[in-house]
Amino acid sequence: GADVSLENKFNFLPINMPVTLETPLQRLYSCKRDLDDKKKSPAPIIAFALNMFVLKWLPKWLVLEATYMVFNRITSMMSNVPGPQEQKYVKGIPVHGMIFFSPGLSATNFGIVSYNNKVIVSVLTDKTMVPDAQSLAELFPKEVDEMHAAIQSKDFEKPQKRGYFADLLIVVLTLLFAGALVYVIS
Image: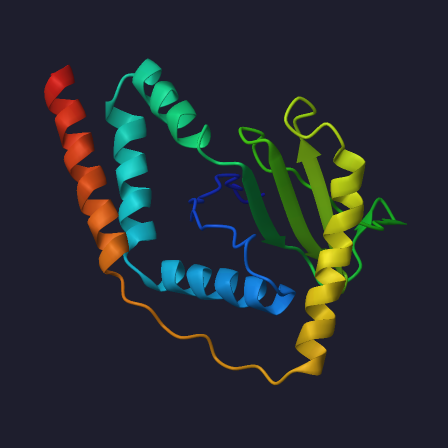
């Protein structure tokens, strides 16, 4: 058989959660605009290259320390994986659903996977940070339903585009910081 690579290339795109915005549609638009801006900016590509450099050249203890420093500032993570859109089978038995969990370095992690024309959401929480995970599990679909209802009742206005200056500034500062770390270590 052919060699199969199980390597997964991914990157993090931090966005602010607009919890202070009043309506579900405002929250949805804000997240959508932020994600679209991040995906179109050069920041994710530069951050990915920087991460690969850091993983290869810096000592493991420093990489772990920096990882924990970054993730200690993140309260929630969400990851989505597009799965197969047709029924799959394992040894002739139909697969009814799929779930996955993103890395558990934050208080709450949402994993979203599409499969066979369904969307499945998994939630992983740290019970010391989120003592009532059941409420979160109940509120999440309600918020999605509210957003869906808002979308159905309004005409969409295309979100305003923003510039990439802030992203580029963050990348430049990160590169300078990484360069200073390499200089200090060597």
